[in-house]
Image (cartoon, rainbow, N blue to C red; front, top):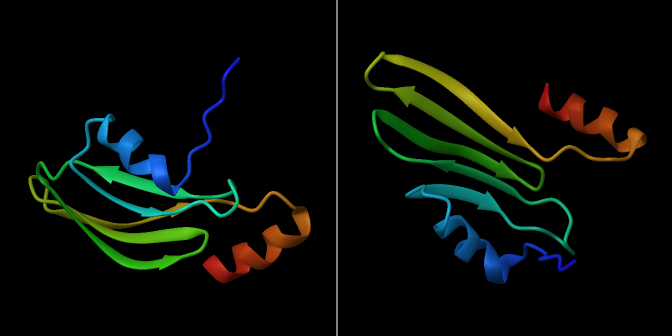
Length: 91
């Protein structure tokens, strides 16, 4: 079995095959973490509000329905001791 690790060198290539014209991303660190937020701007507007090592915060506006929301994409920490700090940070 052949495994392909996603890293900075091949992330753009992979994203390009998924059919999305726009994206924001946080790269992996030593093959850990990494976040992709992918979209096509058909009837939506996406603005990145902030990026952190483990989260991307975006403002999403649905133009057709005139609705808005904040979307946070997260790469959660695996260690229990680190999770509490991260969730407190998100609050």
